[in-house]
Length: 228
Image (cartoon, rainbow, N blue to C red; front, side, top):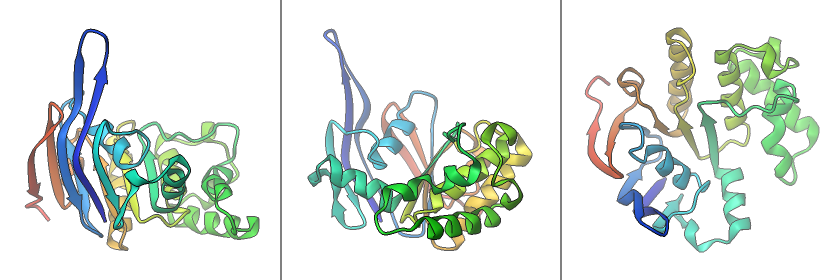
């Protein structure tokens, strides 16, 4: 489903070069649930952003669903992001001036051929699935952190993406809400979604099938989750 080949990311100043990612290769198979762990500053969020085409690597190749996306122009990459990738962020990234249902619909506004009525129908079904049908016409400021993250998950799913990329999806939540969000992600994975998630939490990583450890821009350990 997703393959990163010899990815590097270098930040340069006049005085020095800093390798945020240093020759990292990994493959995520269709239907896997993989977590990336490591200390702050090790490069895990940078790697996720590169995998999601939100950031450009300095070197290497990204293969998504059999296609080398580095061969595409900016418009082609934007099309891939909108059609094949769903994003979940630690800070939710909901638009405060839009209702929850309008936040969920938003990615479909960039897709040709989807009517507004069909967009509303899909958004309502997903909000029902994540337990927010009774809050769909509220605004983000009127929801709890856990509810905002559930709305963000619905938004990530509305385009029916091939892969979900989640960057610390429970980082701003308490333990009860974290467990609820992880249950939703596990349900998504059980339905066939491929998920690559960054987390700093051992407890959260235990929900995933494979754990990658990053240190100083390298993947130092890749292991199956023995608890599953």
